[in-house]
Structure formats: structure tokens, C-alpha cells
Image (cartoon, rainbow, N blue to C red; front, top):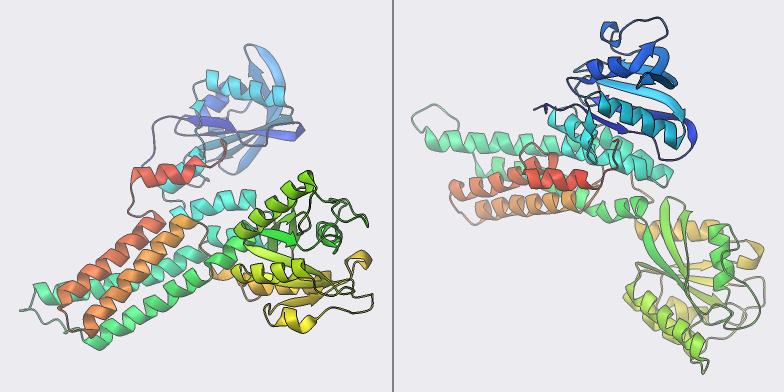
Length: 456
């Protein structure tokens, strides 16, 4: 399924750096590279073996552009499955663009976004889930996110889906053969056989769905709001979690008048933090806008860090926050534990189950916050090596496949014909084939690679 054109693009980030890499892939990659690269030993790239490198120069319009290293990969043993040459030059923006221009003038065409990985998929080097993992590796913001993406790239998710798909295919084939060739000596399929296979598939698919939200917390992060009444220590907590003086901290109530945002890594979970204005009724027009924004932000967040002052009794603003916490996953953070306690903890416990005691000003309690956040996010027992769904496309395929498997079970249990069972099983198989890319539309494939960077 190779295309006829030879594509090229800069595969390193735009900007100054130690090296810049121009990747060339296609049937004409070696011929094109030979037109622009001059080996210091006068040896042609076409005479080089795969997985070998040569030092030389890039020559364009009769002039030497730069020194370079040419790395050769022979089809099918390359990333794309085609002949590939990577030209590494010095990493200035001007030089890398000029080398790319030389390659294009020599006969290559500009690569589209994600086209190298798309060709790897089309040439059978990886399936669609593994291709999607490539962009997840590039965009990973934490160790767990990177590990999860690498495991998917190495086939952890594909293996699970293939096991379920092959199991259902075997059952469907047996059902079809038994129904279509009654004169042949084919063993009859029992209800128990069908139910056992369906339950095995149901267990795997449901487990994948159950870990989806936790996986997204690791990969994408959670919109998190820090809320509480004025001067309760929200900004100090924001600075404790972010590790920087992100928010202004004073003893004056109402200092934070707008939403202050930052992205931090808390354990294995990325939190997109918003430090909001203190919740209270105020006549200050500017502060009131900040309070209104805080309430709106709270109603839309995925996690609430509700902060209470250990040294002060609960007031109406605290009680309002406690009520609002019922609408969203919440960690109650009892701050200023270094001061004498006046807070009614039992009132908070009656509404919020996750409670952490900290002294943000002294930098104490961060680990307890991490444990509470990981508990809510479900990442404490998350094992990325088992294979995690990466995106909504995959989740939708697994969700639909699971429903079809359950329909097949229900058909057996209600005494429907095996034809009805087979239809449901075939629907489940179709969803799994679409997920891996073995049977999918060009539209789906284009959508998958649309968000890739050019050069990958």
C-alpha cells in the first residue's frame, strides 16, 4: 500500500539546536539523497547498506550548505517500511530549511502532517492504536504518560484487543459453519460455549473502559479548582503545588481577584490548576467579577480542592463551598494546622470523604494531597503496561463492542436463534477491527493523523 511519491520534512523542532534532521522516505529517497549529499569518501548512498551512516556535506546549487551525516534505512526495515534517509545537519532554522529545500528541489515532495507515521501504518509497520501512541509519546507531560504511551506503541493495547477479536472470530466462524453446513460433522455450539466466550470478552473490554478516565488523568490532566473563602491559604497552596510564586500571597482578604492558572504534576496526575478569588459577598465591583468567575469555574471543573482554615470557625462562605462540593469530586484541605484548631471538622466530614491536613505556609502536607488526588483519579493501581485507551475514538470502539457482546449474551439467555447471536458478535468484531485499523474508512485514518506534527 505504498504511495508513489517520495516525501521529505524537517523532523526536529523548529528553532536553534545542536542538530536538525531532514527525513526523506519513499522509493526515490536514496536517489534524491545522492543528489544533495556528498560523502567525504565519495561513496554513494545507493552503495550503502541499511542501518549505516556516512559523514559528508550537503551541496545545493553548486555550493556547500553544511556538513552533514546521512543515515540510511533500507525497506522494509525502516520506520515507514520504505527506503528512508535521514540527513542530520547543524540545527539552525536557516540551515535546516535550506537542506529541506535542496531535497525538495531534487525531487521530493513536502510531507503532510503525520505522513511518515501514516505510511508506517499503511505499510503494516504498526496498527492504528500504535500509530496514535506516537503522538502521545511526543506530547507526554509526565513519566506515567510517557510510559503508558510507550507500552501502547509496543503493542500492549493491540494484544488485548487482538485476543478478544480472535476469540470472537473463532466463535462466530464456528457458529456460521455449524449453521451453513449441517450435513458436515461439525460440533454443535452450546449456549455455555457462547456465554463463556462472551463473558471473557466482556471482562477485558469493561476493564479497558474502567481505566479510561484514570488514563486520561495521567495523559491529559484534570481541570482543578482551588476554592475557599478569602485569606484561607488558596494562593499559598497554589504556590506549594506549583513550586513557584505563581499567586500573590498577602494577609489582605480579596488579594486574588481573578483566576490564576498553572499546570502541575501531582504524583502521576497532571492538574490544570486554577487559583480562584475567595468566595464571599462583596461590594467591590472588581472582586465581585472574580468571585463570579470562581463560582463558574467551580461548576465546570473535574476536581475541587476545597480549602478551609483550621484556625477559624466555619462561616456561611465555608458552608456554601461544602454544599457546592457535592457536585464534583472533592478533596477538603484543612490548612493552617500549625495554628490552634477552631474548625468543626465533623461538619466537613459529613459531606466530604477525602480530607487532608496541611500547613501550606510551612510546605507541609504535599504528599498527603498527592495521595488523595491519586485516589480520586484512580491512578494508584493503574498499570500502564497493561495497555490503556488513549483517546475518545478508541473508547467509543470498545464501548460499542462491549454493548454488542452483551447483546449476544442476552440473545442466548432469552433463547433467540444463533443467527441473532452471530449478528451481535459480528458487530463487536467490526468495532475492534476499526479500532486497530484493520477495517476502517479513509476518513477515520485521516482524522487520526490530522493532529500529528509535520515530520512525524
